[in-house]
Length: 400
Image (cartoon, one colour):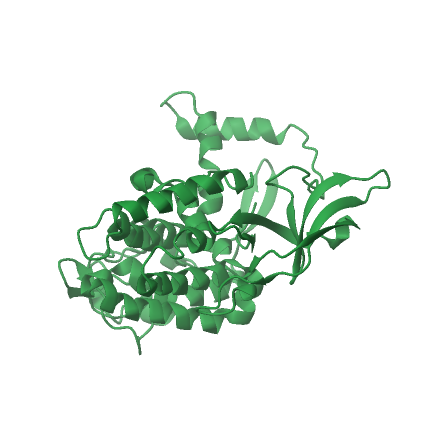
């Protein structure tokens, strides 16, 4: 039975609630515990396919093509006994859910904190031939610092330098992976490494966007397959650890759920600080949280259907059409918007594809126009690329 068809009834204060189990979102170690399977560090640790790992100083997955995928039936019947813990059955197996599709990959842990950091480390701190020179690192860090004033407030954090990599959070890695990395690395990172990074970055740009996931998912999978295969030649066999291997299964999960943000841990991670504030001591933590949530549910909340239009830099940049964007400057007496419109956007990059596909364009000349708020189609930001050009990026990831 598909996950969309599973409903459960829960009684709450004499009210019957209908609950649908959409998916279980967690990091890889937690997923192994919930499914009662071997950890990712085991030889049969992949929860999506039956490939057996190779030891290259750590468990790696060298096979890239012709993978034998797991499915709900093969999992429940334990066709590969080495993947399961002996005499242990997941409690989720008692539910009528798909034990593979209902446990999608979480790109927050596997891509932002996993693969992206795995590339940044050899560039900034590695001992291999991929380490950037001190001058190159200073230039990258300076570019990142210069971008801080252009990052809108919908990003929880400003860009951090590579010197702060060990303290870098997932949201900062996502920002680098999807947006700023394309700008700050261009012309500094060797062309082979930059092209390899761009295959990864563009694929993730596609898979975090509901529209692009629908229209370009096949291309995203081809890019990720290329990235994994080429990574072995660039960084060696030890590069193909579980997080890198899992990219081969990422497109299927994004397609199933609509985009990667629909099944990621970002929404839960952003709520953690709210939950922590509800706890005053270490005693009866769940009781404290429940009481605070109940108190909040009794307070009427005023919600607005529309988010207000921003008028101050850097939060006032919006997409108007595929070939134009604008900065909203002020609201007129008639309710219209006075905007600086960039109407001749051109492609910023052409490798591995035309960057206009994922909304990265160079701003041309601008002119002042009066627009209606209905002309604004989505949020974006304008970044200086270090060569005097303004580059507009459509914001693709979930902004909530």
